[in-house]
Image (cartoon, rainbow, N blue to C red; front, side, top):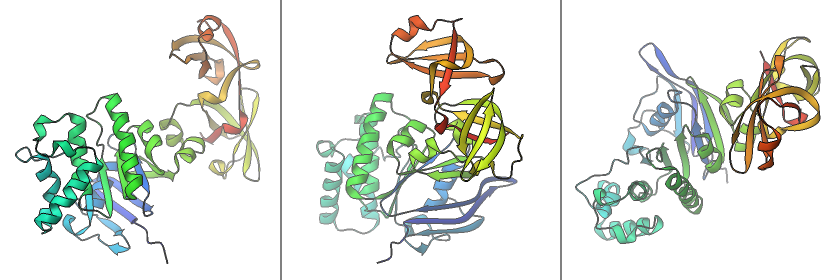
Length: 355
């Protein structure tokens, strides 16, 4: 049996006056996937989510849900559950009535509503809160009610727009784990919006990194982090040191570049079309750098203690400033500000882009 995509967007564009908020978005999501739209504020991720939901009308392109063209369908005909950033609970209804609202709107019988609401509340561990009003709940409990309300209708797609932004850090992490566990157990296809890269990396099967209304890369968390396809992705996801260098030559799917006298091997695809000697920017993750007996010379100009490690900022002259993570408490006594240091790195983990 052919596997039908849960969601497909073909060249979807959205304009607000003269401003193009979304440029020809192409996106496919498989049944049961957890896909995150990740990017800074104003990058177009919420616009994209609202187009999927039907709250906005596309100016160009087509949207399919479960193989069905829905571009012109209203919200209530798209078989979606949505959790908003503000939760959007009805203050005059108790928890059970809030959760069952979508079922009543669909004409479900009272007996079935009661059964499915009880099932949804048990799923989010709020069975004992059914008679409470939203104002009697904590932020995390209100978030669970909003999630239960979205899931009780058994949607084809679950859409979440930065649902954890109002929660404190510890509760946020707890809710991330709970949501992922629920999503995995139900197998519901989920589109999640966030600007928090740690949240995206921890929860997603795939991540669509967005900037200025464009999807720059759609890949697994490992692919996004280790094999960024665009300079913005390399700089936005995780920490990177950027070295100025030049392109030397290409051999198959690998290329040779040089930075401050050091030769590096990097993926060749981002450098297609460059001539030898062309300027490149080389991105290296801090965990792929280490203090070494021989390497790029520099001077420690600042340091920060982070418990299990220290972060050193090193002035490497023409190579620029380099962020180095050194494990262990002894790093603080060994690498004081002003001390000379040599930096070596794992050449296989660098990536370069045309400058």
